[in-house]
Length: 298
Length: 241
Image 1 (cartoon, one colour):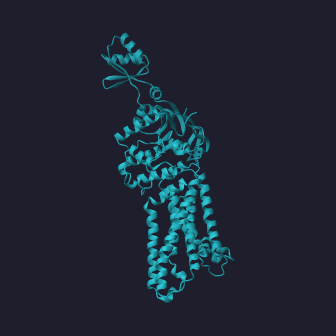
Image 2: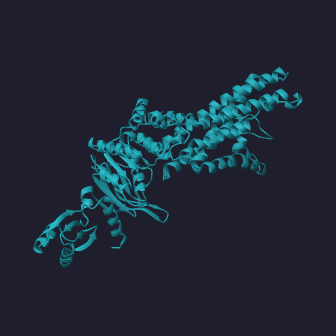
Image 3: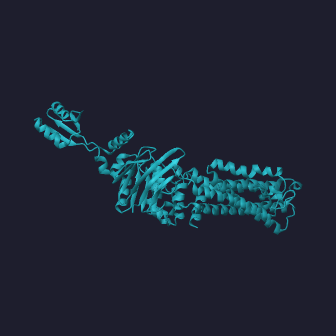
């Protein structure tokens, strides 16, 4: 049984369709990145999984059951939805105490999570005076309060400094390694690249792809970078074989032919190769490609 | 019980509650002291005048009740609050409990300030106090009305959600339409919230028939009815922010 699942989830706001017949499942023990352009329906999907929204159609399930049926909710799911959802006049510590009291979590745990997110020093201060990064840490502290089996984080890297991002990455990896479930949305693709094992990509409320990170980034056309003694003649030969060739700072960027074919062609043409390296398409590049592909109507 | 504890921490971990209750009591002290201390004795007259400043405190209780729920929507804390209690209605029950408790607390503090200051100055100037039993009845009515007004505000707040809108709605429903009963035939007017508070405070005007307890029950019906509607809406509505 998947820890988190949406089945044919549809959410309409009046005439606007925020999520459109979306289905996917998230398993434990790995970090699942949740990607999509602004307005793709990521936040709506997350809110449906938390029981904050009522689906127009379909369902959202947590450990196989509707989220409103959760027993001990904070020990099941920890969520950080936005870094601004605090009463500005309440201190960070008191914000956590309100939640802890409601869930019957001991006060000592409040101090523990404050320590964990390195906010102990500022805990007495009112949230009004917090930076975006500090609010983000407080939101994470609230998510971790119940030591939950599942984490749902919406853009947690927003506003974090480089050390904070690294800390967050380590935290998420550690949580997944302990067998917990982590669903994290982000538009900082370089972060996702270093953190996620799996990717769920949506667009206009529909599923675009759900694969492992490695599959996602290598599933596109992987070009090769080629340096040769006679680049012009090689380019002509490659083009004749159907490859597309682009000059790239003295080298050639060749797509449409694999490394093997390029090497053999160069040998046949008796052109010495100085470099032949496959270019792993970056997550960002691949992401933008996928978004462009989907722009065209099928 | 846990949720009630949480709501209690929420109430007292921001300055709003302290400022509102504190300011209300300070004004009450000033009203009571100035009126009974400085007004010409003939003008004070009966005990109703001595128990002064209720209007301000009642308005504050109404607003405080509204704030108990609308701040959660205004600052987006509703999401985390309802994550702890996904069925949501227990949160509203806890908020109702917190509203009633803060109303009772404010009511008792009012009695302390008003009784301690106004009554002692009044009797010091030779005023004749009504029998203790009557005083107890009046003050009990005040305490109950404060609690029920906070609940009234909570109900409106849960229905309206928008903070400013809810405050305006609560004050409008309570005070503005209280002029309406004069236009209505019979005793229907007594069942309006402001008139019910009047009965509850033991101030029946004209040919009113509602007893003090009756007034309390009518106001309770209003308050709990509004909270019930607000609870149903809160359970059903989406939390999109």
